[in-house]
Length: 66
View 1 (spheres, one colour):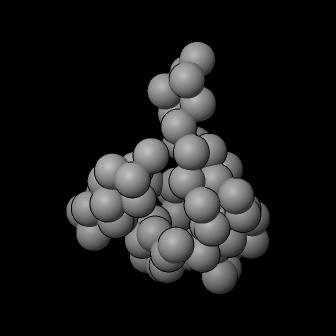
View 2 (view 1 turned 90 degrees about the vertical axis):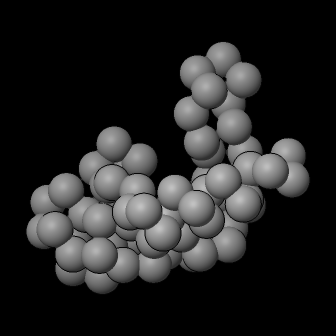
């Protein structure tokens, strides 16, 4: 599954293949099978990126099947 993110460090918008998406039942935060990789900054955590509007739609679609 590819999700569209914006890097908080470099402000670049990019797609990252994060594999399967799960929701942590304790924190209600998404957990990804693969790391988020910014083309300029490398591996980023969920706290180091923003979900773009497109990314929010993609995330909703990914979690609807859980």
